[in-house]
Image (cartoon, rainbow, N blue to C red; front, side, top):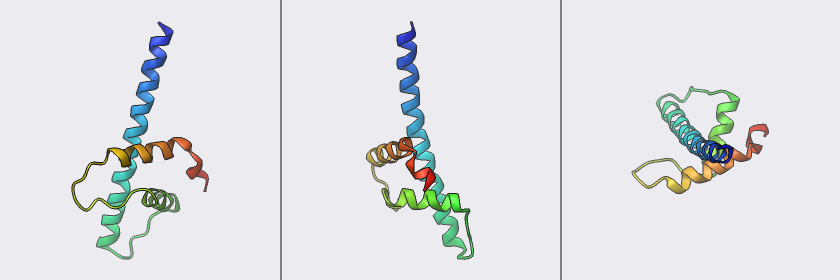
Length: 86
């Protein structure tokens, strides 16, 4: 019983990492839309770090395209946690 539960938790955590990656991608897109509306828009230092972190790996979404590989790449980087402290 414990092994089955551990597998389910492991799968749930992997899915959570993907959801967080998608949320980060949405956050950065929204930030860039807001910045485009008003040049005076400034965001917190933490939000700016997240924006730079994401743009090093993923380009802006300008047209429809498959995002699976990009979501996985962002998910792996979020899992490393190293970027948080830079």
